[in-house]
Image (cartoon, rainbow, N blue to C red; front, side, top):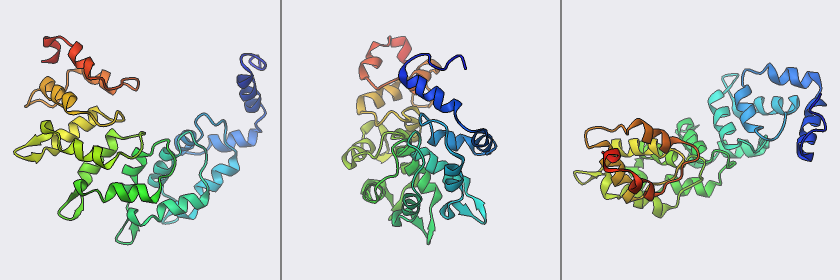
Length: 248
């Protein structure tokens, strides 16, 4: 109560709004075992109403065998992080996109990859999903190469869909080739390092490969932590600033 009226006008408004929430709403939300997904959706939006939570969790499209499909909810909450509750119709439309179906059923693994790319971006447009999944460079033996998609979705997490030309350029980088073929294991390691950072260029990939050595796919711990930090943005000058000993 001492905080009421303190700080900026926005802070005052948020505090007063929270203090005015009815006990039944607080108790209802706190009792949900899926509070993490709900909090992701409502991040920065304030406390949700119990009715809005009920509506989302009881959507027929989110049920499986009479129970809430938690994997689907996780994908939905990822895309809608900090954006508030989605409309029921929008959820239905997303889950029925033809490009996300396999053998007449929703492909949950595929949805998970798309959700990573669209984290905090809202639901994707059907055309954007189709374009990505049909890229020739992501096909293998006439089928979508899911290992490649997983690497792409990791690097592009929270950044939105990549341009087709950027995907092609990445997969053709000389430093990612082995015996004339794309080295998927190396790409997977690079994707892990570059999670949420976007696609690296040839200079950066070469320096990473040099720093870890051909037979050791683990970066020195301090470099790995730096590259994995939320505030780090790729700058090839960073690598040039390292001493020779640090880069070996």
